[in-house]
Length: 95
Image (cartoon, rainbow, N blue to C red; front, side):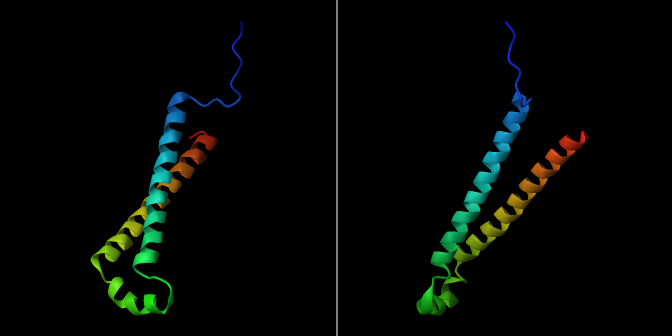
């Protein structure tokens, strides 16, 4: 009996790499998103009280740490996307 052909020739190693890349992107983006939302609530809350207390909260160690995490995750996310797109482009060109 003949095996049906797979319309998308995705090998196990490629599928594994795609899974790792997807999980990496989701992890980095989730960390960035959660940190940004927390920073917004804790360090720069809305309204007049947020404006007044923002002078104190934005200079706190926690808020500085959250800003650093956001910078790092933004850089990592951009790098992961660039590498993934470059790899797909090189595969499409047969390089």
